[in-house]
Length: 283
Image (cartoon, rainbow, N blue to C red; front, side):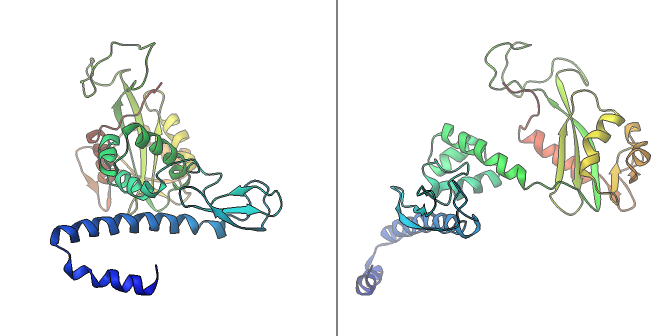
């Protein structure tokens, strides 16, 4: 827009009604969010290292896509690409809503709640979520350091999405287990969480936790100088000699041992169960 046209546009703002101002604010906010997504995507081009097809570092701008994305053309293979070529998001429509979708995921909203907020169909939001999860996993920490809390918990086994071959009769979600206590209807999950950060390592076990299975699950994720805080369970007593690390066990009936406790990892398990997150078999 030319400067004169922009000045005239700004000059008309005082004459707008409150309703018109609210409409204008909503439109400007939506356009600003779309522009922010495009600018964020464009920042990836200098870090791509070269053409995603042949690796050539010589390419130039080559028009734009129908969605307004900047297209580039490689000098070597003559193929065109965008900043998202070769990523899980290259064929997505409505890319301007990716940040809004990520904000909903961060807030812990369900698929249906996210769909209502961003204005997309729930199936589209679900497919987006499945595309975003693998890149997120790549950024998870590979090694936990400092002081880590460890505990195991049991989640109701879920067969959501399984159409045939059910080992039990189908029922509504949230139904209590048919058997009392720990049984084959539940899946054991062991979680290690670094103190003072959100770094965590979650492993779904195939059977009732044992010292060997827990050590095999946690061993690669623990630093050599880590201090492991656990409950008084017998499976954790040999862990110090088995993994060569320091283990501090909270006595039975106590909530902490000096500065050591497992309240953070217990709170994490509570949030997972409260939000309806289940680990198990999915068809």
